Length: 402
Ligand code: C2E
Ligand code: MG
Ligand code: MG
Image (cartoon, rainbow, N blue to C red; front, side):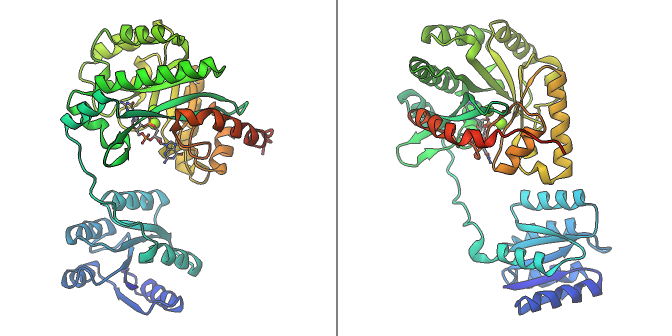
């Protein structure tokens, strides 16, 4: 690996170079001035695989350096090093990632050889994920056709009650069974559906399929809450609550077992209409959940104005909160708020046992995430529930304080 070290402190620079060489890296170049490093990269943009860069430098700081890397189309990895506040380092790391730079991790001064070794392994070209092929955009016509011929299918992800370990419900997540591209995930077509005015048709299809599956499970004795995602764009026609009510009554699924998860990805076009509709949904005993809480516009204003029953904390505040002081502060404040407002708190993004234990200990009500199960086709759910029974007992051992 060809490595570049950039730090205004000559001592740190020398130390890092020595540590890297001890770890077997032979091609290490170092600069005390970021500008000189930029010039070096300008001469040969593809000549470096990994850069270690200090965040705080007098002439050009790490953030400005990132800007140059983006301009040069740098395709290697970047590791930021800092003696500053951890949160500044995290923001810088996040910024670099948002610029699509490869960031295997960040380092705190003083840097230990063990940490360096670990980062070198992660930054090795073979370990890096292959660049995702440019995702194809689907046009409105294709999507409208897919909805019409029934290519949209629901997968279901279980929601687990932390106290009992029992499955209290499922969330319907739409997928497109594309005849050529295989299973296509919603992040590739929901925004397009909104832009093309197809989101109502999509929502009706998802709801119809969800109610059909809920009815089928009920016949087998499985009384699960059914959550369906709705976009704010669905909440513009005033007859929306009547439409949902009719669909539920027709399928014999009680309205009180229906949850609508509302995500707001952009500003509401017509706020009064949305308030009218959401309030009427609640009058009909349909449950409302504020999805992705803490991101975008899913914010305190919504909590103030809309009678939500459930608060779903976005997974970016959940996974790894047990080892991150800022995340756990935000998470605990959200849990406290949900409790005081009489709402059920759901944690999404429970990805491992540590997340499960931490959120359970913190008093969260409901868990959802890959640690429990990924979303699955309807027919797999009964067998999954049986498997879960076997795992359950071990996950709800009494919580000990301290
Ligand atoms: P969401 O409603 O917040 O759903 C959770 C997303 O996180 C799902 O992605 C789910 O598969 C994923 N997920 C679940 N557990 C984990 C975990 O432990 N770790 C991680 N990293 N991810 C996890 P999916 O299915 O790709 O859906 C993405 C988003 O698309 C949904 O986010 C929702 O906003 C939207 N969506 C899905 N179905 C519909 C729909 O029928 N209508 C509308 N309007 N939006 C939908
Ligand atoms: Mg959701
Ligand atoms: Mg969510």
